[in-house]
Amino acid sequence: MNTTNRILLALSALGMVAIFAMVFLILPDDRAQGFVQKIFYLHVPCAWVSFLAFTVTAFRGLRYLMTKDLGHDRAAAASAEIGVLFVSLALITGSLWGRPIWGIWWTWDLRLTTTFVLWLLYVAYLILRRAIGDRERRAQLSAVTGLISFVDVIIVYFANRVKATQHPAPVIGGGEDSGLPGLFLFTLLLGVFTMTVFYTLLLRTRTEMAAIEDDIEDLWLAHS
Image 1 (tube, rainbow, N blue to C red):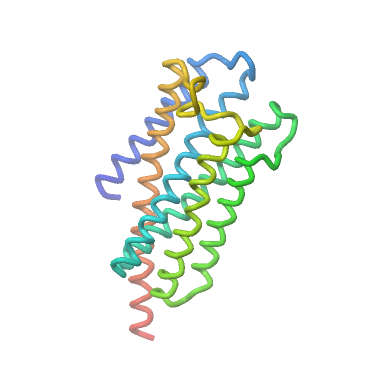
Image 2: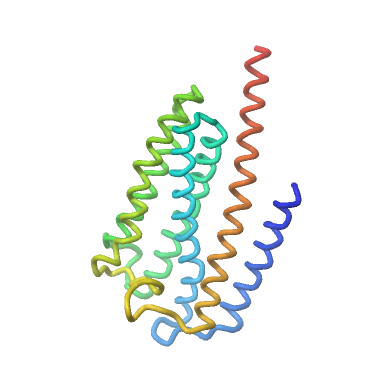
């Protein structure tokens, strides 16, 4: 592991310890929702990282189409894998939060439904990559798929901003009544920062692994 990755790992670990301390030892239970509301500090950062990851997938896919550099394709695919992981966590934590508050695990709310569609789109993206052997063709089709799928990222973001839904309104940038008191906001932002650092570490590591996998494949083909 290189120095940059070690620093990212250390920041991620320290950040996660700090978040757990803030959430379970310092912040009080929510007056309306009680202890279960604390999952908010994991749910929101996971959702944020999924948005970031899919944005990177779209951008790197576009860069591949412009340059034909397979390094961009490897980064796009790595980011999509991480994005699927984090959007899955967002859906799971949302259901765990919703069950005691709404009385149900799931509802076809606009925000929830478009997020589930987002998960399906990027799972399909990963399946597509597995189904195509030729690197250039796989990279081109993946780039186009990533750009098309990114439209749903925008739809999910605005889903409960332009239309009232059962999903809670955004706590930041959600209108005049949105916002959090200082210590609560600090904890949320710490969570977002920590998850972003962790995402960066995962992205760098997975992209490096993908490059090694390609080198091994090239060696195998050259000697076969």
